[in-house]
Image 1 (cartoon, rainbow, N blue to C red):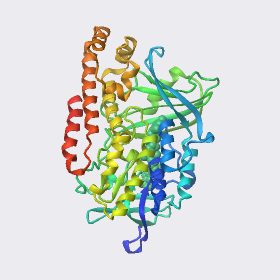
Image 2: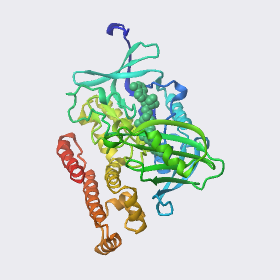
Image 3: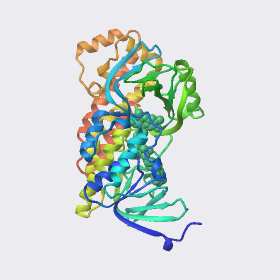
Image 4: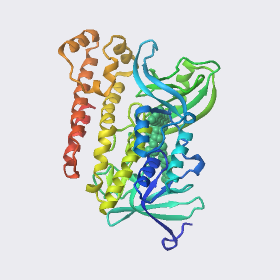
Length: 457
Ligand SMILES: Cc1cc2nc3c(=O)[nH]c(=O)nc-3n(C[C@H](O)[C@H](O)[C@H](O)COP(=O)(O)OP(=O)(O)OC[C@H]3O[C@@H](n4cnc5c(N)ncnc54)[C@H](O)[C@@H]3O)c2cc1C
């Protein structure tokens, strides 16, 4: 039996944060650096915080940026399993591929996550571990905190001026808000919003040839986006996995089985160090991720790249911005959408615009499948530069277009698709650069961007 309302223990702070993953801890450090009092709640016991099913690739640029913004040390030796230099998009014939620069680390999520937690605790952040948040506390049309259950099954209220939902893909606060609360906020989580994944960390008998490489290996029998990943994680170690949306004809497919069928082809024998499933968002970012008294960060706001699932860096960035915007609102004593809007503006600038473009690339890859991807790369119709944000939004000369037309023979339908995709990405980039500075113009802006996706799909 739960305690009655009057028996609830109460805790109050400037900011209460749900989830001590990258979004939550960075928000905690960012807010504490600004002298706010912070309560950080996680279902996990303290020593398990940071441990997460992940491909573990983290961009060096983002991690250095975060370290500067949060005034903490960048990833250290013991937190880095291996360095990364290149991303390889491989077709069914691995020799037909595209290589892209991807400077970063294979990071040990658990060790790095524990260090970030330590950084937060050293700044007097109050951690409440082993505690599951159940729902938001909403009063007078404002989120004023959360209701949580401790490991002893006691119900507790945590009250704050600002609540940050950093609870990961399942977004416990965002998805448990009353339906009529802040209508412009998306409050659902449908099967279309996330991919189910299975990932293994494996050890081979001999050294692999993926030193400093992360590989997206496209295969015919993997549902869209259609690849199994192999990330070099040390001399003999690999981080491998796959994931897809369990919708439509893929609803009944087992992700684990699809993964095992694919990996056997490349690595028939290995020792398993860790094997687990999880989910990751696959939608463009929530362009509006604030509501009165509430900021949503990381996977809870669909901040991961919908193509590669790169969400660790975006979550760290989003949390850092959330802490900063919380401080500005608290200084003013105003917690409405207008006063939190700055968060959306900064998220769009930092990574939201890029991730919005990548959603178009996901749709393209979904349409063309593994076979046509091989054709396009083999013929040089798709090049390395096309897969970058610059490539996705550039203006093409008539000569390079003509060259593509010739190389695309006889599959001209692919060229038409690519032209449409380029037009859509250009429009999205332009719209993102015009993201409204205030909430007032948002609904109109949102209609325009949604129309571009709708037309393209
Ligand atoms: C298979 C897979 C591979 C991936 N590969 C990569 C990769 O290579 N590179 C990359 O950058 N990203 C990758 N990602 C994405 C990345 O892991 C996430 O984007 C990132 O962890 C998001 O951080 P977050 O803080 O938003 O959420 P999370 O890391 O999920 O943290 C959420 C925290 O909230 C806690 N929590 C949840 N519910 C509650 C509740 N009700 N009450 C209290 N606490 C709660 C959880 O215990 C957890 O600690 C991958 C994801 C998956 C699933």
